[in-house]
Image (cartoon, rainbow, N blue to C red; front, top):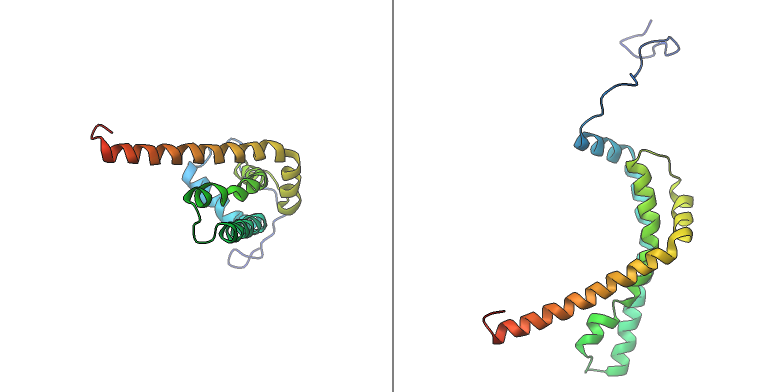
Length: 158
């Protein structure tokens, strides 16, 4: 017999959880998974922070080198297009984050440290290509925004 419902005998067979129980609503499932995996998500984000910190350091290094080369006449294209280049190197590490969060959403098990690095090793080429394409889209969009802004100032049609 249990005292106030605690210290009960859990070896006794009972109804348990039904196999045909309807699935909960999506927001409820989201917050349940989020609460259950919160510490593991923090671990994954701390691991992801390592390459992001390195990329930020490389961006700062590129900025320092460019400012030494060009002095006070640092061109705008250098700041917009050359300094963010190290961000491409962060893209393969998104494979690790994607794999871990996908497993959490599917409610499958994931070892945070080992699965992160394994998925980075297995998918680094595709995610590096993804990072390069993302950078290319950034360049194209920034050129188009500057072009249309300049055209809008001269012609009311734009």
